[in-house]
Length: 501
Image 1 (cartoon, rainbow, N blue to C red):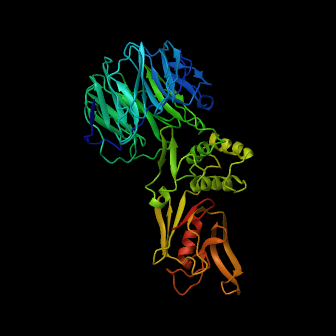
Image 2 (spheres, rainbow, N blue to C red):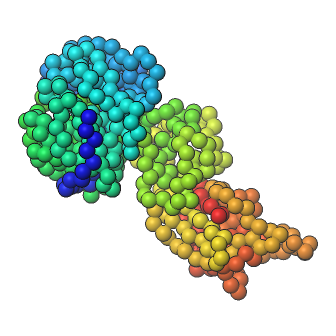
Image 3 (cartoon, rainbow, N blue to C red):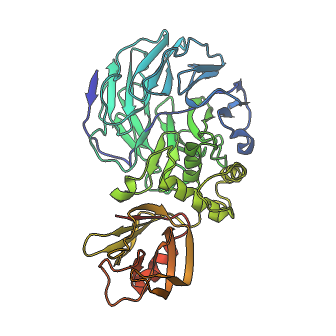
């Protein structure tokens, strides 16, 4: 095995992940592209161009697809390594033991009489006439493996990790990698050239990296995408390649033909990969976690723009470099403040009770939004985060969509009336209010304030006239100067997160 971590010149922004794809029944002919509206269902496969047919109801979650050598069939695999077949693809077995890491891809041997499965830890499983040439299973990797590709003679294979690291086994040649180089986006897929003396890597932003004799024909790097790229295929002659995004969008370059796409599908059925045959290809759809789970809600709400993270079948990714205090709050699948804030923001936009919990009836509303990801219940406000820092001098910084919107001196709670530390979602907003209560000495107050955003009980961000700011002197709220408060308040929409630290 060789784990080469040399950098190579880029032809575009780079990131790579495994080709994740579900399976379906294969019909080979001159069919027209299938309609996206009927194609995009969870754990299904749809054919375009010279392959037609829709196979639905497959066991899932689907994570990988590979076509047979003649292009008249394919295999799909689930995360647990259960292989399903279509067309002339023969089943040579599935994983029957417990896995240390989920399966992320499948590749066929040159004669179609076997296949390899690869797991995210780089473990390789062989079936039929597929030979074992080594793996990274048991080795601590910097980043997970996201895909594999066999050599033309089947006597070796490449594994690729999300940091662009390349691992070669058997007669697979090393032509360079991005391992050790900072990437804008993770790598999500790879494809070798016909002679095996080069390969392409594709990143989640559609950037293409070329190595060896792989030619650059163009990329989507630098172009805003509706959804991240999740995989790629190369033309048999090496004269082009195409990539597929998680919403089913197809981007072809060089001589790679376009035969239709699956764009417009629901967020609950993300594309996980594609497999090609002459004059056609299959698009495979996976599935989010169930919508009655926090993880499933996080995945869909990320797709609707309510989270500081995006989600594709390769996992969650921060949309921007997050402040460390925000990053520390994230734990996928947990009912934490980021999850509750995203739910509250969605509930507010959808006209539902903003309690931060998806009730059974609200699941239907969330599913309807997922079925129409560009519809009225997508997030129109972006994502905002406020950090109230109690270090002297006290301050508040607000980020909106990853950029600092305002930094200002501020006052938190004074002696006897401290502001509770922690992170909380905004749950009420008022342009003006008279705040009433009792002072520490027992007297009462009635203070007119403006630009109010409540985040924890009676604690709020708001304008309060003071002679100075930057010291602990409030009755528990986070007090702001007028101009700063007027700038910050529009960003503090329902569900925005406030940290007091």
